[in-house]
Image (tube, rainbow, N blue to C red; front, side, top):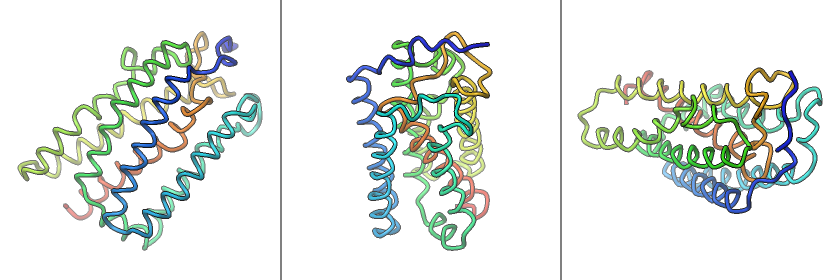
Amino acid sequence: MQANLDFFPIPISDGLSWAFGSVVICFGWFVCRLLRTVSRRIASYFLVVGLAWLGMLWGLAQTPFFAQLDAKPPRFLVVLVPPMAFVTSLFLTRQGRYFLDQLPLKPLTWLHTFRVAVEVSLWYLFLEHQIPQMMTFEGYNWDILAGITAPLLVWYLQRGTLSRWVVLAWNLVALGLLVNIVGMALLSAPLPFQQLNFAQPNVGVFKSTFIWLPGFVVPVVFWAHLVAIRRIYATGN
């Protein structure tokens, strides 16, 4: 089946692009502050490399680079592979694991509140016919629940009345919600492996600041869950 690409050439509105870009910048600032609690040097490195990475992705999104949907291998891998490879490397090295084990759990949990703003942005992206309804909270994307419940989890963590196994369960469920939307997004994209939503494919994440969602926000959220799960399961902290 051929994907309907009528809205692929149509740009996302400036207001939505700027709004989502602001969310991502605030998200990155929060992550930088989180890293700074452990190491100023690493936080500075993250800031410089992160801004360069976001700038490169945004620049590529302004060109026809991602428009060649039949390229093999898919050019979208440029967005996904580097950040996920970096996240993986942190868990494979002794220094990386030592650094991760020092990160405080409460800020790691607060980070997930940004998922509410992300999901609202996706809903507006759907209204502009850039993604299918399935990828919003009106469809089968319930990732917003992780963002809504994160402050409640932090409140219980501050009181010290919550079992670490409850925190572990929350992270596993929230990670499952993330995997769910990522799977839908990939299978709805007009790429050679598309399986869903041919009438309204996922074309929004190829454009403007929304390229930062798969290239930055998703890997960081994935990383935050893995760090929390490692800490709770391995050390009981």
